[in-house]
Amino acid sequence: MIFETIEFYVIAAMVAAAIVAYFSRPATKGPVRQFLLAGELSSEAAGTERSIEINCLDDGRVELTRHGVTGVGPDGAVSLAVTVKGFDVTIIERTVAGQWAPLDGVDARFVLDFLGPEWYHVNYKNEDTGQMAVLTLHVRPGIHIVKPLQ
Image (cartoon, rainbow, N blue to C red; front, side):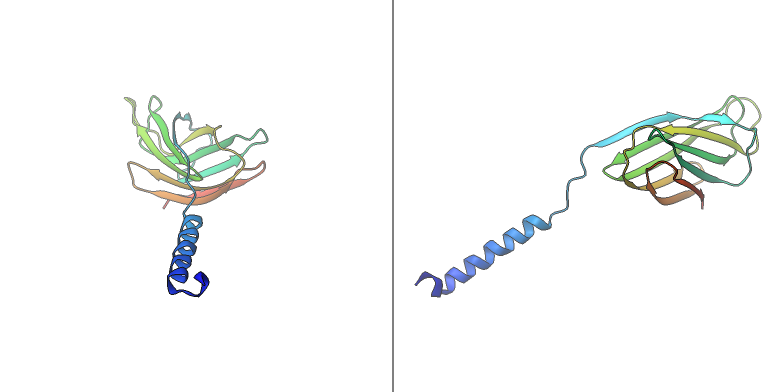
């Protein structure tokens, strides 16, 4: 008897819609983690092409080298502000010129030891020039990526 009424089918449709809506929600990304990294400057093998090079090391760490940094002297600094939200990684590069005359095309090396063996969407941006690179990174030993800044 109750299965033959319109009210029953309206309520059943509402319950089904609520269940579908509940399972269609996006998964939470977890807490946002922020890291500040200081770069190790090198002008020995530096070139003028602005790019980032990523190497995944055997111990699980990720080595990021920024090639072609300009406007930084030998007493200057290059640092990264890294924000990790789930599998989205945003990297903001900041430079400090220093008091000495700037060198042409310095390399800055960073080690990221906080990424797990997962796939990440990486957005790298230079705060001064506005140049950026976007890539997908699979953190596993042997991965090597070179991406020019545009």
